[in-house]
Length: 215
Image 1 (cartoon, rainbow, N blue to C red):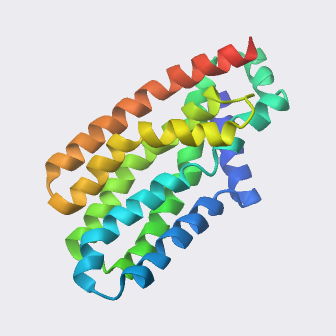
Image 2: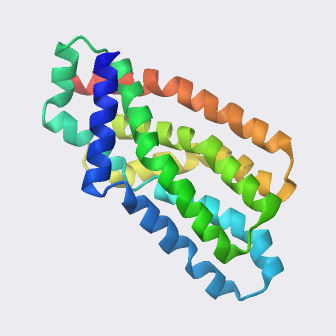
Image 3: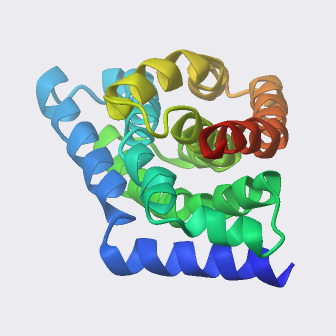
């Protein structure tokens, strides 16, 4: 457990210190800000479409950290050192999932809160948006870790990662954006179930991919 905690602390500290944590946030705000100017000031239209736009921006922001989640540590031999110290590939993947969510999830929620003001989201709609993103960000972090492990060492890993992540994240997008239009607990319940499933399989899928890369 001390080894896992040290991995999490190291990754989170490096992410915040290097500024990599804020790149998805800046992208998120940059992607969401032009939308109200493009569709006009109609508050009803913004209310109907703004939540979906913010969800799409969150999905696209997930793509940015893919190339720095796994590949640098593989090239530097850090993963080999972790294995020598007795950590399994699954434990390393689980630690990376937690650390990536800590560096990715809370800042993204803050960015969504800021961007929602431009979309006119408030009250129940704003609460539903933040709840859906809070439920889904662990799954988005898990998908990012899985895909980063699967594409580690491949040429054009960033582009390939985008091709893999977007279709896999479609169920999250459907129920996440759907919860805003329906504002019902059923969409959030399905979203939570999918998120829990992706988080549960991430250590095993990413661990297997890391093992294959090392061997």
